[in-house]
Length: 507
Image (cartoon, one colour):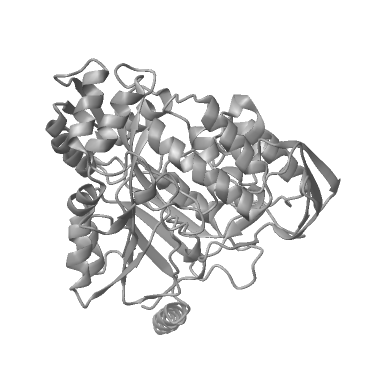
């Protein structure tokens, strides 16, 4: 009996070992770990503005249409669309698309989502993209029609914004908003969020694109120091990292263990004013600051030259952007700047605060250069360096004298400029109001002929450079540092991480 028991135990042990071997031989989980320098500030796509949040939303939610890596509008939830006239857009939705809670997405969800964006109570920065939409009608379960009150040349491009993601009403109702939860139709789903540490996304098994995503899991790790991000990629702890410090990028480019991906960006670094606070309520003071700031020097020192000086339209939008030589108050002129200050009643300059944060997006390095350059015209700038959450809060509440910002740009001028500088624009945190600028913005978005629009936006760029609600500094490059084991990722000039959907990691 004892020998029989020993035999059974031996057989059981062999079966366990064989089973363990079979399990080990199975396919390993495909995981990519990406390092970022700041935490997401909520996940509600209709509300957030920070890049740190948008990069996660890229992977969690879908829109009617999206931009590919060449900024071409391509299908997303809408597999096709018709434009019978310039006031009507009809979108034909994919069938069988599921939200992450398992419910099918239909035209009713599109109607609800876009109406939520338009609702003033939502205070969505995306409302400007579709402000001319007067009706959103469900034609049938998989067809939705948008009717406009006037032509809107930028509508399709605007609909690619993460701020116009499609969400389920029942999840919003249950939680009040989507800042701490998510329920999209994107390629990945939120599994875990450890604040200021990590966020784990897992593969959406019901994603509508067959064979995607390639990865089983993406882990975002928050590592504030850019040098530590590079060290993480070199050691293998990270598979890739979003790095913006020019010195670190140069260091990475010399290392054979990593690959530096860099692409001209559409995002824009600006020095913004609260136009309701003295002395910046006087356009002459704003113009003086603009004349004192050397765009090329700021770019060289703050970004090690990794970008291009720009005007009001991102320089990469070559069809629309005017060269700086054609824009007033864009070249350094210290004597003229001092005269403007004297005419405004500040012959001896003045003191004010520049709000910034130590993270890349918060622009501390830019603020330090600006602080030094403004001394040349007798202006004393104190740096108000705050932590990231406070920075966002001050931005939302317009609680600052001036601020260093990184604005999300676009190759479509109406999409970028209207919500930013219209007197009631969704992200006009300058509190800037100008009837002439409003008139040009209204005119440009309703023109359908490229030549007519070009003439309007040429005038608008000159007007914004002269009235200076912000000083337009430069467009930084978009950079990713990746391990040589990573393949399939494509950079997008607006910083989108959507192409992680098709990325693979060799182990």
